[in-house]
Amino acid sequence: MAVKIRLMRMGKIRTPHFRIVVSDSRA
Image (cartoon, rainbow, N blue to C red; front, side, top):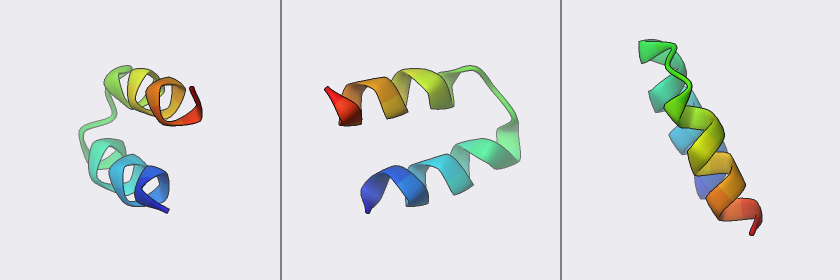
């Protein structure tokens, strides 16, 4: 799942951007 990879990469920065990415992927 690309969502998990993006979450792990964005999780390092700890930014609210990861929420937007997850919402876009879920949509």
